[in-house]
Amino acid sequence: MKKLTQELLNEIAAAKEMGVYLDENENELINETTQSYLTKLIEEKQLKVADVVQKSAQGDYVYKVFQGARKPSRDILIAIAFGMSLGLEETQRLLRIAGVARLDPRNRRDSVVIYAVSKNLRIEDLNDILYDFSEATF
Image (cartoon, rainbow, N blue to C red; front, side, top):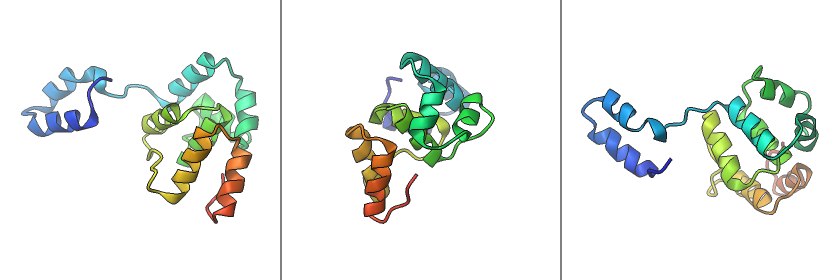
């Protein structure tokens, strides 16, 4: 992916035919599934799903997500990101691939999550901070 989102939006608006746009920008489009991206990350980081399950504090549901048997919610994906110790860029990419809203620094709860990701905190620490600010925990 080399083009900025705004460039792609401009191209869509100017396109005379959608097929031409799609052909010309095939390499810019997300063609990865949530499961395949998680599998790739687990291999790259040399992690075990069992460790992600434990560190995400989400129980056996995480196994089902990795198997592709469950479509995870945004909160589950964020918890998995913590279980894998993903950075902000990787977390945002995971959310984007899954088709859910990325973390928004203008959202109070998301700001706390971004803070915790940037400080490489554990999900338990994140939950403590969220609780202190009367925000929903994971």
